[in-house]
Length: 180
Image 1 (tube, helix red, strand yellow):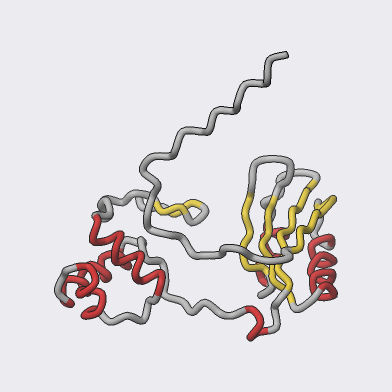
Image 2: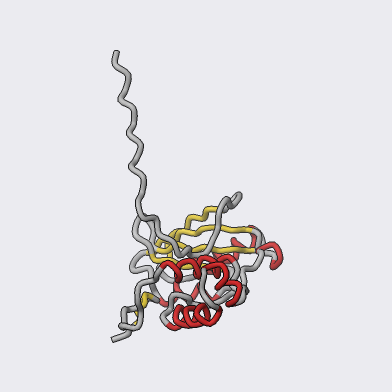
């Protein structure tokens, strides 16, 4: 069948589970995608041709979607990072609202469950530029409210990681209240 639905890749039989070598390669490529196949091979214990074949397969199957440069926001004068919740009067995932993604300040758009309809990650030059983007959002039919959360500092920001946590620690038990 092979149809794509909202960028969720359907299993078309060409994919297989990632093995330990694939995950190690993906982890190294996330850190620095310019590493040579020889360097990658040395770090994971495979030959350069074997690494090349694995990387080609990872690209072909969609495990590697693209290779891109991560830009320093200050270098392009986009130092204000904000998350914008967008509330609508009806179904929020309209073509008009999705068209907001044409602005380069919009880095991510997510349809979400909860007390809002859409969640946007935006990066602008300053608060005036954020205000301009918010004005464009309010121009969209059906938008009734936004809530913006301006980031004061970022403690961690990273791309998707290849590892999965195999076992989560049990939650700490709260101490019983003292007896009187």
